[in-house]
Image 1 (spheres, one colour):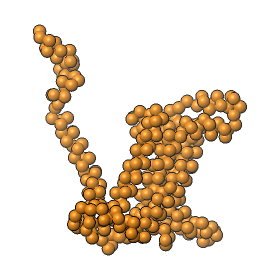
Image 2 (tube, one colour):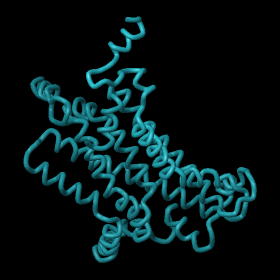
Image 3 (cartoon, one colour):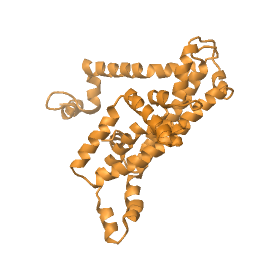
Image 4 (tube, helix red, strand yellow):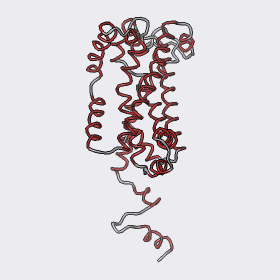
Length: 303
């Protein structure tokens, strides 16, 4: 028996197939079909995004009419006060909503991880209910609630557009942060916190020096995800906005009536890059915390 035949017999498994690199030479048609199908699915998902990025460099008057390649659309962002105000409102709203969601979601996630019981499953059910509730339902419910608080209850702060938008955007984000923090702490032993109590540390000191640092990667990831979600709040924003605080998604909807212009695609491209940077920072934070790729995916999914 030759050396090649011996090597092949070692690599061959009990079912007659080859293992390792030799198996790749004998891929079945089903493997090839699945790979082609996967590529087609990715193209289907990302083709609209690629199109909007390409057309952000259009020098034409309308978005759908390609006239040439240039950076005129990005320069227009600096020339139109309405576009600048809409982008500013969206960024400020996303930041405020991320702060609200991170504060509430962090406390909720720590409570669910460190004080288990039947109440946790009820609370997770409520969070899931918030996550799957259609935005139109939240929007219809928030509008009269803000009106009641701002006018009937005499709380003018709820008449402010930024406040309304921030609270509305934080509803779903709070649930996301809660999932992330709980997923981070559930897999970690509470011995360090018990040791802190044994050393006569106060509850607040233990929370600040032990619990919060353990949960910090998930807290930062939740903040960045909440920020990106706040940039994309369209339905709720369309209902609760007030004059002078129109966010970018609502501005785009109103611009559809007169025809989309290339600056719409330019701002969308910038926001897409901002979102990708935020997600990359989330992955980097979790990676530096020692998480594997599987752990990062599980944490970002709240599992």
